[in-house]
Length: 88
Image 1 (cartoon, rainbow, N blue to C red):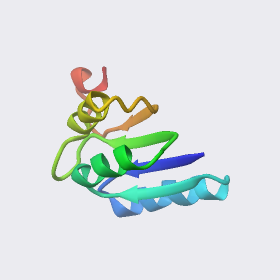
Image 2 (tube, rainbow, N blue to C red):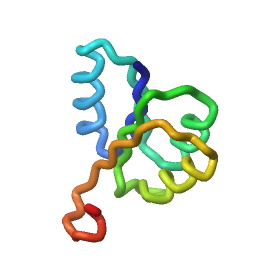
Image 3 (cartoon, one colour):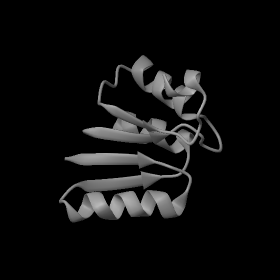
Image 4 (cartoon, rainbow, N blue to C red):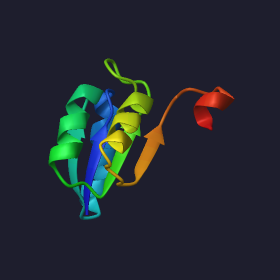
């Protein structure tokens, strides 16, 4: 299984990547939404772990563009936001 992590907090991204790699997953890590869009449309990923608070394009916009490009892989959203609208 190949997983794409899109997270701008390098320590968090590398920690999650190490855990997943230890369990046998292939993991790619990117720090910006603009990088994630071409990667996820040109490569085949089984799962995307996507931060909402990215420095360039927020995770919701990345997800919207992925779905618009008919990329249907599962996406797990990460966020430090605590507002109900963000969590729903």
